[in-house]
Image (cartoon, rainbow, N blue to C red; front, side):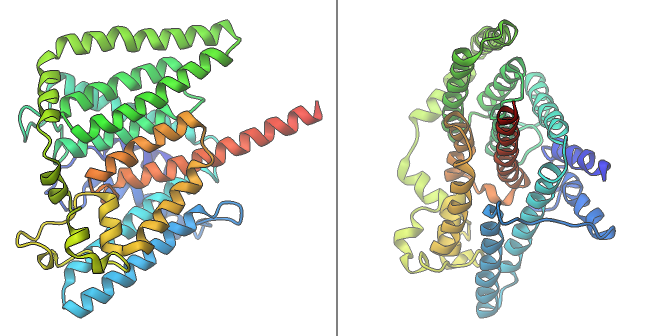
Length: 379
């Protein structure tokens, strides 16, 4: 199914455009799972995990645990609200496995996904540069996302997937870094800046490693060219966006930790500690506040809604992925995960694309290293 990778890629590129009301499936969301329909219609094998690659198993267990918790509370409280998180989880996991099957079990697909990742970030950068899109929380820019934080999270995930790869040229990485920096700046997202700072550290470490290890003058030139692009254009962006920098700085100075903890849902831990063991289920929010607002944090939501089993299952998956990454890759991988402390990322498709991509990256790197080792042994 060669067309599947292109359908998924187009869905990924257009996943930044929210045409319908918030909470409703967007057109691009259907494209991301369309390859799964192709698998079913042609009765092709759809691999979940193998004996050597068991990390996805923990995500599957997490889904079934969330299914059990939400159905239990839904029946007990006679509320259909608990069904929606089940649908979101199932959709996200389907997106995850579609990309996993496209990348790991089909050779030569990584470059195609990279094209759509880069194109998507470049499109977002150009729209931000032109001011094309929405400013729902002026002067913060949010393009065609629901809000600036959602845009920053999407850009951070896409940027991390590109910058973590060793086979992406340093010049390309330079442009990716600049695109990401400008989009985060225009979003004025405090959490985005925190995640970007961690990503910058990993990016810098990776560049330093390339300079130390490279012996080819051609490759070394690429490293310095990429660094020059970042420094020169980065200076231009900062110089031309002094007001935006000042606004971001003022937002950082105005952080009310207590208020943010309450908004994100962290205060529920000590208000309702009885739910931390097995979870409260994701629904009927009136149980916890009069406004009926949900938790706005991936990690707080996993712990509170699904208890210790929920968060430990996700952390085990992340641990298994992280152990297959280098130090600089770990830092880049961590950036969207740190951002997730202040946004409910697991309900967006890009979160599951991000998880699948980094899992596949560890597998592909391991296979490449194995082939190189066998070649050296034969030589």
